[in-house]
Amino acid sequence: MVEKTPEMREGGSAVDRGLDLIEAVAMAGRALTVAELCGLLDLPKPTVHRLCQRLAGTGYLAREPGGHHYGVGPRLMRVGLAVQRGGAGPERRAILKSVVDEIGETCNFTALAGDEVIYLDRVEARWPLRLHLEPGSRVPLHCTASGKLLLAYLPEPRRARILRAIDFSPFTPGTITSPSAFAAELASIRRQGYSLDREEFLLGLVAIAVPVSDSRGEVLAALACHAPSARFSLARAVECLPILRRASAQLADTLPA
Image 1 (spheres, helix red, strand yellow):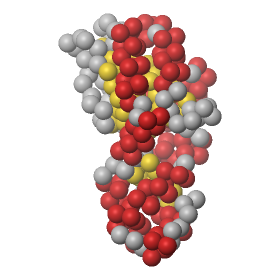
Image 2 (cartoon, helix red, strand yellow):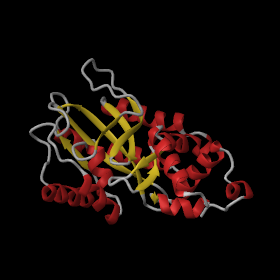
Image 3 (cartoon, rainbow, N blue to C red):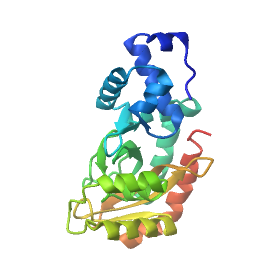
Image 4 (cartoon, rainbow, N blue to C red):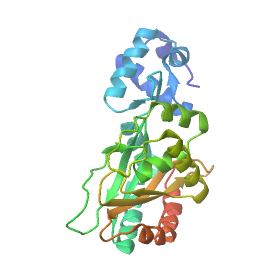
């Protein structure tokens, strides 16, 4: 819980109130409702609601499916990960580059932001044929290797809430559009410890993702590798699991203790 300073009780400036709200959400470790934030910050509901909308619009907060809870947004997540261990960005990028050098395909470091996947970092392979997505780009949950993996490892209540809000519209003929089939897919991912994208997001593109966990075993991010199926089959992707899991353990060391 955020300790209320005299400035917080008096309201403070708009900047102070915004920073206090960001701190409250970050320290909670879960998405909070406007009512909960009002209680933590001792601010009126219209003020908190307005701040939440503004911070969600700039990416510092993310509105959970259903619109009643606010959690850490992609921009705040990038800032938080960047300052950990004195700024671990270069270290993570070096790990990703070593995977790309070994496998020969593009690798991504991703995390969950609301009901989407955000690319926190990425190292491209040196192929002319590749999917170009900058860090900060977002992709759907239900048809990407990272999205399915991050969903699979969420605590059940939050996973259920997101699943109820997902639009299972197909991106390709391979997209899983049945909620029951998708639930079975997530259960399989938890059992095997990795996720595959079988041309579910883009035709001709396959991917594999493994979890990146903190010291408590909580999955905070994913390491994914993707490439055109013409040169990177699903069988080849699975063969790369030892490389990806080794890199995942190294990435875990760059996360908060």
